[in-house]
Image 1 (tube, rainbow, N blue to C red):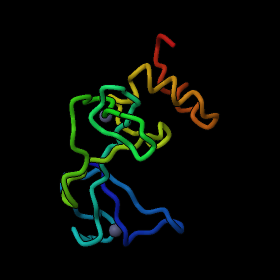
Image 2: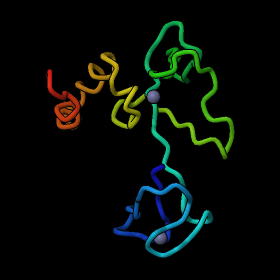
Image 3: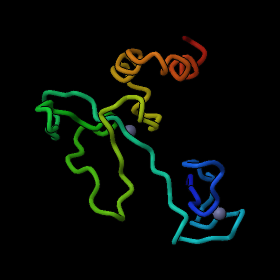
Length: 121
Ligand SMILES: [Zn+2]
Ligand SMILES: [Zn+2]
């Protein structure tokens, strides 16, 4: 899993991130108190039949799990989702054609989209 250590600050607002199978920083040795697991951010895509109604009145569904009707179950649940395509990091959500179209509306996403195109793009 991807982790971030809040004790090892690289720059203001930017912290050391690393791959590990437990919450322990390879640099400073800190544990759970300051090391967190980074969860993939899923896409809340517009879907008239989606289980989530936003404050804007638009119904949405989780891109890679359209039937999921709960988002975070609590502070221990790492599930994260955003209606903003720029915030999405889940590879399955990014694989959706609808996400590509939504992301393409943002100029800063062009590089990301180009990188995702693979061999057939
Ligand atoms: Zn650290
Ligand atoms: Zn996803």
